[in-house]
Length: 101
Image 1 (cartoon, rainbow, N blue to C red):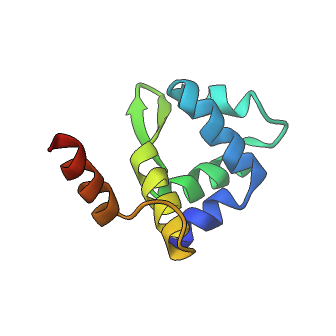
Image 2 (spheres, rainbow, N blue to C red):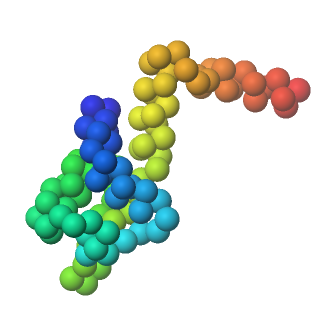
Image 3 (cartoon, rainbow, N blue to C red):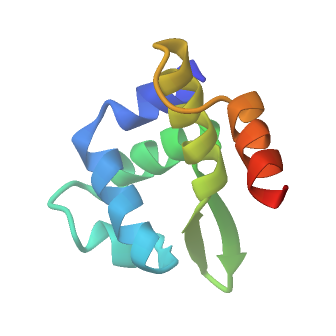
């Protein structure tokens, strides 16, 4: 989980995730939104891949990035529950059982 928070600590990487939330984008298309060099952007993409927040697939000469929301959701839920925030799985399951009765 520390890799996820390391990745989220940087505003550039958070902006990349925001862009990918709208649609999958190539590395070049993502880089066009920033004034950083391609090697700098590549380093940001690498951190996001290491944290398992994005999936990268080769398409011809391009690399297409997609956000992996489930990983992000799990990390944020775990973080919130660590502080006693949010419903735990047991609470959710109990609520589901009561509603189906």
